[in-house]
Length: 548
Image 1 (cartoon, one colour):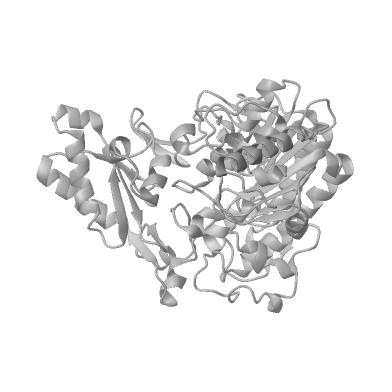
Image 2 (cartoon, one colour):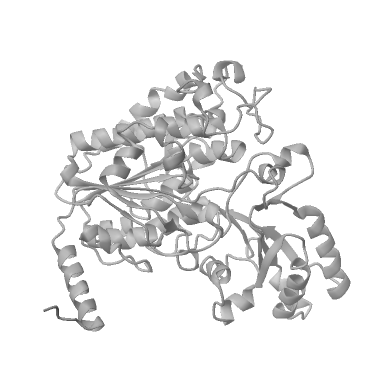
């Protein structure tokens, strides 16, 4: 005879089993976090036939594959993405509301990791004047160091923000690419001097060798049927090229000069970063100590190239085919030097990307451009006509920032000014929704898009009026043909928010999870794995299926 259990008893039994499962987890010797900048979820399947069996496919087939992982806020940019992954919360809590934002007190745009109080270490260039000072809460890596001071945290990337935010405030080494020398540097916030192994790595001048090579497709270009034509009207030209086509002879394109910016557009930069990360793994003896160590790796060239070529280009396909080999190399080294039973790896992305809007237009799909410059000029005229002064201080990331000091001097109510600007912007063609700061602060969320904006909003760092465009639309800066090439990201729509998430390694079951998982759940899941207190503002929830 079957005995029916009440829903409450069933829930208690489930929770008891879940907690018991969590308590039985053996803490790994090493956690490796891999973030791929601008990776669409679909790439795992669209390019799968050309991947090896030792990289992405190995993770998919032998790990926990979370197939419905979403960003739950806007804007979906690199800085907020990395901060949200590693703090387990959204920008309204961790403070990184964009890559750059308007600072009302300084009356200028500031970078999310910019810090004039520190200096470069390992380079004479100012590219090291960066730190996590704008990050308002602890990361999972901070929490690890707070709890287990002998743990080591190393974070590496091409982009500064993609290294700094994952590494947090207490990292033992945070390194990013020096565009002036082609090496890796850090800032005085973290160190007074580069370690010898990093100096020796830089001394090899590996990018100089890569800049003498030719980037051609890994396979026969005629087999790249998953992408559009090589010579596409939707792609920007790289410097030194007359067409956006293979091959890319870097020596000819640079005329023999060391153009390190161009280097970051190539898959060679991913190889260079992977080699640097594995050098850190060996020289810092990660995973070899008593306490758990953490290695954060963020691949940036996928985004750097992706903005110019878009997700349907052969260039992006080949970039991922070659990145797959780097992922395979990292997995092989981890299994060799640390052992699969001793590490946990997760792979995700900081955002995805919208298809090139001009391509959408040409295929009669929803999408297009908001040429905002003339609209803002007209808006300023309307503001002056009504109030006698122009109080719009800046437009950044679909945010209008007001000069609040001027409003006070002119005795203009902030809410009235916000409502007026909103009334004008909401009439712009292809604007989906507009919200004022007062609305976001004082009312409950009434539907998904507004709630996502709220989670990305902060009073001091965000604007007074925030708008979002219709699906498939992006802002652009002019009417020139170049304005309709390439693409971007940042929206609340699935093409930007749906990203990969795969877990692999010690005690990780082989399974697929189709329910929705928020990007903030990654840190919340690492908490029981690492046997830590939750970081100070984590709002995500652990992925219980990993602990079954």
